[in-house]
Structures are given as C-alpha cells and as structure tokens.
Length: 359
Image 1 (cartoon, helix red, strand yellow):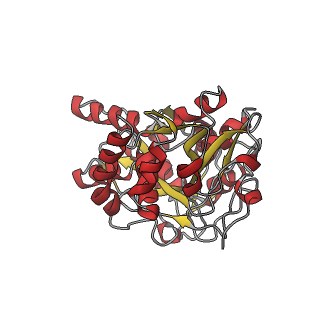
Image 2 (cartoon, helix red, strand yellow):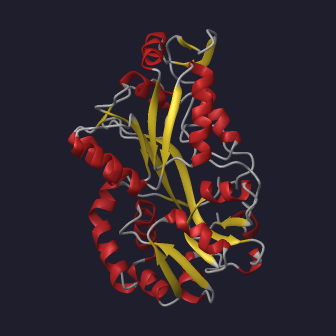
Image 3 (cartoon, rainbow, N blue to C red):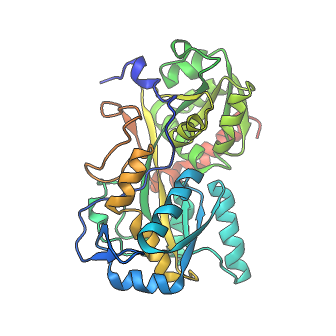
C-alpha cells in the first residue's frame, strides 16, 4: 500500500538524532550493578562483567555507524549506569575502517568497539577474526533477517534512506514521489555519494538497481548530478544551495541537522524505501575487553533503547519502541539487501556508476 505524499515528507523536525540502537527486555539473567551501586534496568548483563569492566575503567569506541549525538548519549548513559568512561572517535565508516586497519597493521590497537554502515568490511573482519562475539544476551529479540547468529557483529540500527532537501527553499509539494520520477524527469541539481567510497551508497544503489534495473541508473546519470565521497557530506551541499536534493539521505543525519536548527528535511519514495543496518562489534584484541563486551551488550539494553528511541532511533528489535517524531513507515515498501547480494552485484554496480558518472 503506497504511502501518501504527506507521510513521505515529514522529517523537518527539531528532534535529536542518533542511529537507532537495538535494545530490548527479552534477555535473562541478573541485573547488572550500576555505577552508583544501584541496579540497572539492563537485564542479562552480569554483575561479574560489570565489575571486570569497572576495573578497566572504560572503553574506546570508533563510530562509523553512530552519529555524534548517539555517541554522546552512549558516553552519558554508560557513565551513569556503570561508572565507565567512554572515549569516542566519530568519522564516516570508510575513515573508521581505515583507522582500525592502520592500527592493526602497526600492532597498536586503540579501539575497543567499532560501528560501521559497511557490512562487507564487518564480515571480512569477522572472517579474519578481527572482531569477536560479545555474547549479547537478548540477541534472539532482533527482527528476523537482520542478524546472522553465526557472526560476531550485531545490527543495532535500522536506517531508512530517502532524499534530503532544504525545507526553507524547496516546497515538499514539488518533490518527486518515486525513484522513477526522480531519475527520469527531476529538473533540479542532485548530489549523491559514490558507491565506490560509501558503504551506504553502495547498499542504496544495489537495492535500487535491483528494483528498477540498470536503466534507472542510466537515467539518473542524465540529470544534473554531482558526486561526493561520503554520504555525510550531502547535507552541507544541500543546505548551501549547491544542490536541491541529496541522495541517499540517512534519516538520522537529517534529523540531527534539524535538531541543530538547520532547515533540512527528508522525503521517502512511494516505490520503495531502501533500508540498511548499522553494525556494532567488539575488537578481538580490544585493550579493554570486558568494557568492550559491556558496551556492545548495552546497545541492546532496554534502558539504552528507550533513550535512543526518544531521540529519533529506529529499533531493530521485535516490537521495539519507535521514534515518536519520525515518519510512520509501517505501510511502506521497505527495500533490503544482504551481504551476499552486495558481494555478487556490488562490484558491477560500482563499476557502472563510475562509468556513467565519470568517476
């Protein structure tokens, strides 16, 4: 059932933004001891793990999947709940992956936990033993199809993708309502990220060429399209007027800009809403292994999920709370992809994009 134009253009709202963390209350086990000696609401995290993590003092998180507000919230909540210090680095997934690879090559690993929007890199690290299983106690509560129990990485964020626009200069009524309309006849300037550099863009273009064929990409290349390396750079180009639309628009990034007072909004297309998951894992050689394990487990905790949902996150858990200010996508056609499809088709999609867009 297609969504109305009104539903698809409703996220120019002043809410804080984070990529959703998957949390829940389906785990079993004793409640962990909080930093102030009280009981945390996070069932399933053992008191022994909390005590061991407190001896280590804290953890270092390299966030490619998190937004900065999400990491700041994590920092605050982990300190309140467990008395642990979180230090973080926030860059796009490609830069984070490069940083960790360089640290591993030098034999001086600083990071304990990593988040990425790049499933291929996460799976490569899983195959190579770079990341480890954090034994998340309520992993069974994750929506079917989003998690592979055989791998150590955990999806903590379900992220819808759309088109972003400047609500101060663009009337929502003038936006295209389908990806087909966008590629075939949109007259304005478009900026997009390169699937050869951005994992988000690769997933986006893999899904849309699966939906509409390579002809859709050919049509898009005939519009006024500029290409940037990172999906995170799209917002600035749209806000400065260098582009009328930015694709793919990451919902949480748009909400984050709106929270900071920027006139940025997102619209969803009626012929399909591409989605992806951000993934989280602890490093196998983490300098603070117990704190790393605790941080990953806490991402699926009822307490942390509730805080993130209030700030715009979308849960990956069955019946998990959804952000009160975000668009209702319950009737939308959600497009998904998986690592096998990206591995099979991604190289061809990237090569064709490079050819059509002169990369």
